[in-house]
Image: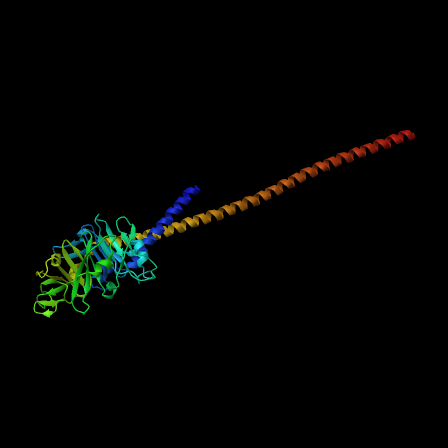
Length: 388
């Protein structure tokens, strides 16, 4: 019976913990669970890493959340990203990653999160460190499929000084790096072949960045890559003025997210120098589609069900504890009553025994006294007869 009660208590405690964990995660997101999508759409919260492959879509935000979406969330026919899931706190999605990127952690050393696919199609999150003498942690890479950690690498100081941006791709072993021109205008790309034993310091010594140039000095002009040199401002050689936040490549298409809009163009631009490549512009509102209308009611239903379960769990726990307390009090009362009754009954028995013993003694005393009296009368009679 006691073991059954303990089991019930354990189940109730687990329900309370589970419900509390769920509601705590929702509280971190806010009263509106889809607020993060709207913030992303309006760039109130900026993405730090964007991954779009044939397996998944991941969006890491600067306030330590992760959107984990299905691979078909990105519709490349109309260039729209359907966000129909609430984001997960980074500590919940990747606890190990959170430890090294929490606000009070080692963010002074870690660059923007990087991503690559190795030759075995394993997906890795990279956390490169700025090279310095007194490092408190080591650079590392993290396999998001097997959750294993491996040795990472250090990047040269130039990546920090020039604020270079990682651009993830769905290709094996390579990615792009974007760099704003040191002159303040223009933007360029560099492609690197990356592996687990990659040494970026050697690669960056002889790196060649391709400047993005426009044929016309208009926002919608066709673009081309100019290797090694800036575009200048002569006819047919206009530098772009892109304030790039992040980007990704999927199915041979660049998606570059800027502070104004989303730029889309073919990645053949990198290998076909000076060839015209069409540029497509999408607003943030039209690219990030927060499609939560159909799911909002169901989510709130689940939310309220969990709140009700949490309250019921608390009530059950309190009831169980009250029952245990009542049981203890009743047992103490019964024991006290029995003890008192026992003491009372023992006293009566003792009294009855005393009465019996005293009556017996009295009876014996009376017998003795009567025998004495009889003897005395006999002696007197004998004495009288002798005198006669």
